[in-house]
Amino acid sequence: MIHFDVHQEKGERFKLVKTTDRTQLAMMTLPPGGSSVNEDGNTSSDQVVYVVEGRIELAIGDDTRELRAGEGAVIPAASPYRMKVIGRRSASLFNIYGPPAFPAEEEARAEAYTGAGLGRHDYGSSG
Image 1 (cartoon, helix red, strand yellow):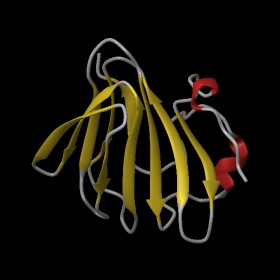
Image 2 (cartoon, helix red, strand yellow; image 1 turned 90 degrees about the horizontal axis):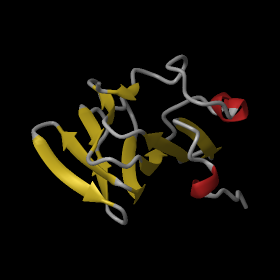
Image 3 (tube, rainbow, N blue to C red; image 1 turned 135 degrees about the vertical axis):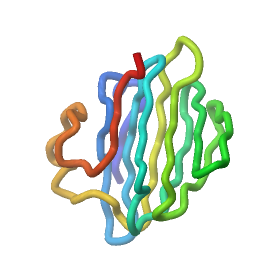
């Protein structure tokens, strides 16, 4: 069993929690006004996004929706997407990839996301 507490992870921006042969769980926190953009999509992985806290605007291709805490969406493999925090609070998200999208070695680092080594994502503040 892998135990984690989203409330203890607020300082992390992107953290891989667990990788198995078929899936991968990551936690992500975006600050107010922050965004995540992947113009190419996850090449071979579907991604499930689940909002734990806060609100985001999620655009998958031309379809844009607002997601609140307790809501989620599926981003099909190779679909370009962007998510942006709505409001004055940070957003905490679970991201589940199937099959895994990132090398399992990244889990061991357990460091705040710095933009290196985790694909084509752009995590940051829009302002």
